Length: 264
Image (cartoon, rainbow, N blue to C red; front, side, top):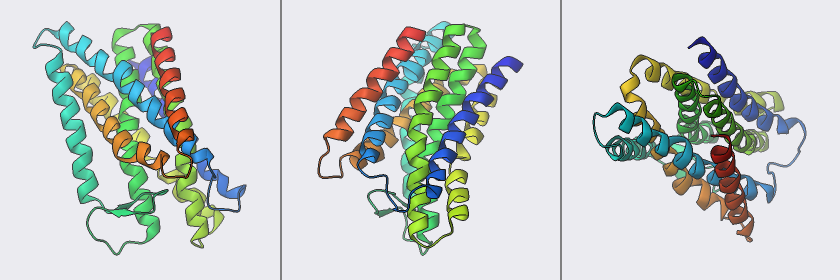
């Protein structure tokens, strides 16, 4: 168990670090944008998350449920998936937030500053990502299979890559709003803190109540698919030439699928 916790900590630490690296772009760029590259990153992130939802979360959830023999494998997979979607939908409706690239406000009417709304939006996205990485390492720890650890690290790599532009999407607009570079970096970095927090919580639940694992895995998958369809894909198609986002999605899906199948 200790080895599993250490590896989970390494994976969660990596995705948090990537958010901070993205936020550090305030010390490099003067403009509050990454340019057309953000479409590719957003599409790539969407592809990674869809592939991870299938191969790293839903299929293992079905296998785990079948192994437990308590009910048909599709029941916790479908039930957890629906709960994950409803959970993010509820958070979306009760939390005022601002989408970085679309620049549109959602949720209840709020007088909160743009800074607060931007961080709220990214925080909502990061909850299922942190859970997915944490659960992947917990699953690997319970099985003891080195291939599953490799798959968990592949998932952390994919999530980490998409966290880089996400951190930049927080810090660069804050710089444009007149906030100092140091504070913009700190806020951008802090937006990713929810990932290791929820990742650690998911690991603890998985170890303490192991029959919940299929439900937790599919819950995370449902929450991630919600983020992909609600946020990432639409934002990847906002610019004049949306093909970059589409190709990014295909690349992310393909890479994540190959890593998961080849290493698993």
